Length: 155
Ligand code: DQA
Image 1 (cartoon, rainbow, N blue to C red):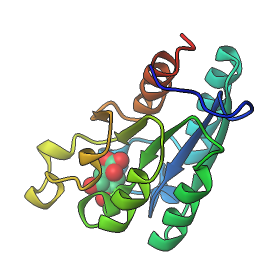
Image 2: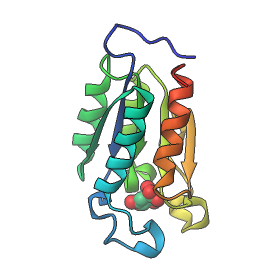
Image 3: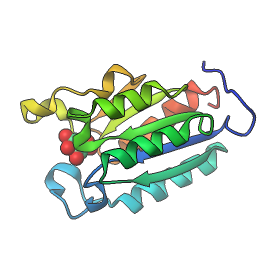
């Protein structure tokens, strides 16, 4: 179990989404499904409300903005759930930002990246992730929340 640190941050989970995930529902639905990102946010909100956890949910198309968002979680969130999207396969900067975060990190992909093109098989993020969920579609976010609650001693 992870130390929960200062009071106030113990129960906040930051869910962070990378580039093009704002287009979920319209973008390659045969790969990513028909659920929208706001639909996923609503499902996550319902789950965290039920679990008595706080949640933030964000998305950016910009690598530096994602780094800023991860840095902002330091000392404020207990855990991070991240779908770095295409930056999964390219970004040492996002890996480094996550390495400077002091709590559990769960990496989520809607699709099974290992069944796709070879360039998607490597994740820079997995070197820091405590768990990786891929190929479960939108449900992957709910599975990640359930695992995060367990890691934080909340379930
Ligand atoms: C993704 C997989 C990545 O390879 C891709 O670039 C994405 C989404 C997924 O959720 O399956 O944008 O992270």
